[in-house]
Image 1 (cartoon, one colour):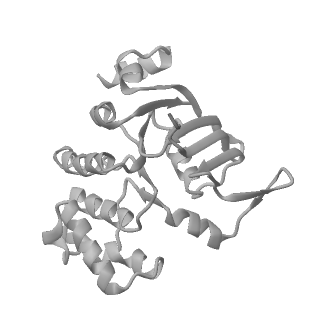
Image 2 (cartoon, rainbow, N blue to C red; image 1 turned 120 degrees about the vertical axis):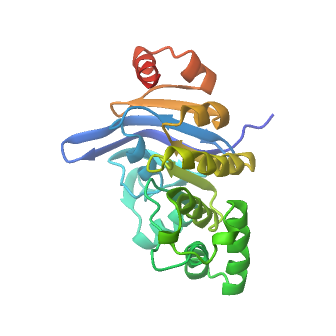
Length: 256
């Protein structure tokens, strides 16, 4: 049986901000078509690692590959050289990212937010982009809000538009940075449902989350981070129900 190719291959990834060492040698592998949930206390480095995956943060040491391609650098004679911003943008175009804050353009409608990048970055014709945009809004349950502006949408609706916008670029990988943390509790379910459907459709996803129910139900792998290192990783059952490490046990018991 052939092994599923890796979508993410992080090898001893380190990241410092001045004297502050935030990531201290992260090893993480995520095969194509799988969902990996990163959990852990605030300040453990989860969001920083996520931002390194698409070179929004530059790694200080180590290697980070997405779909076999070294992210942010090229290697020559054993030395890493940072790639141009143009090449970094090309790499990012294949990686969708959904943030805590929805970051929609306030002066554009939901549909215009979704079709902006496919037209201007991918060169899709406006007619094709619009057709695809409406399909994606339908998929996230918001076809009836296509011509609404962000201010006319609830937080949960804005976040679903943000997901549709990311998917519109046909990414090979989706990154989610605590996508439900800024939402009122009653709006969380709709966003998680959309993410669940993406996972069911085979999208490779790396999700920083505090939603343990989602991690248990959807993740193929759960990674517990604390203090800039991976403390423990495994299936949801292994990490959430039968954690081996005391730090994992303490974190999970604090959530109950």
